[in-house]
Structure formats: C-alpha cells, structure tokens
Length: 180
Image 1 (tube, rainbow, N blue to C red):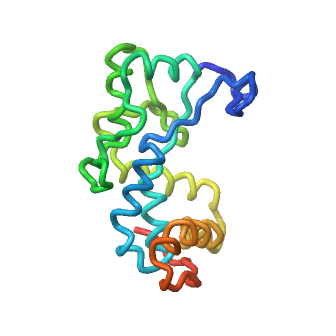
Image 2 (cartoon, rainbow, N blue to C red):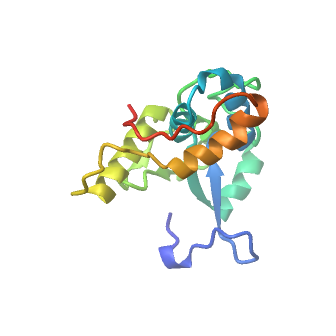
C-alpha cells in the first residue's frame, strides 16, 4: 500500500482511507462455524478453526470502491458454500475480478513484504505467515510452543458460538497446546 503508515486511518470516521476486509466474509465464516459446530469439542478446536480461516487484509478506499464496481461478491466466498461447507482453499481468490479489472492491484504479505498470488495463496500459507509473525515476536521467549494460545479469545469465541447452539457443552476448557 503506497499510503504511509502514519497516514492510514481504518476507523469508521470521516477521514477513513483504509478498509479492513475479511477475505472470507464474516457471515460465511459464521455459517462455516455453525456447519461444523459438533467438531468443536473444545474451545481450542474452535480457536484453531478461526485462526486458520479468518484472513484479513487492508484495502485503500479506492480499492474498496472498485470492489463494488468490479462485482467482487460481498457475502460469498470461493472457500465455503452458503451452508458453510468447505469448497476451496484460496482465501483471496474472491478478489480475482478486482485483479482482472486493475492489473496493478496487489495484496502484500505484511510479514514478508512480498506480494501474494491470489490464485495460489492457501489457508495453510496464511497459518504459516501467522506462525512466522509469532516467531518474530516471541523470539527468545520460553513459551514459543504455545502459538495462539489466547485463553481469552478462545473462551470468548466459544461462549459466543458454541453455547447458544449447544447449551449443555462445557465451555470451561482453556486451549494452551501447540497448533499444527
């Protein structure tokens, strides 16, 4: 993104020039969670799913406007169908129409600084990027094996998604094991 870091504004205010985009729309991700709710026997299972499939990127406001003009689907994804069943592994493929309309459009990996090929970048690539970011932050720490072991996040997500659908399920477990 050519906009200097200090000039970026992703707020909802009038000076917003950055849009945080979920490559898998939130409604699609919610349907995917509901589709496999029985798979989430612990809050850690839920946390792992969210970490691996909730991929975000920042678009300049011009790119955000072009998404609508190019017909980028707002509420669908090539990764999950309307029922939440997984059908693909390329979270950025949804932006192909934007790339076709603007050959200069690029999504960059914020950890490596390299452009992402939207046709080949997978959820596993996303997870490896998160692991690389964690390695950079946690270098020299003793708790490196506890990648993404946020008890707060997992417990909050568990309460929000699992409890209303499965009121008898125990949500007191805390995830602190390595993922992968």
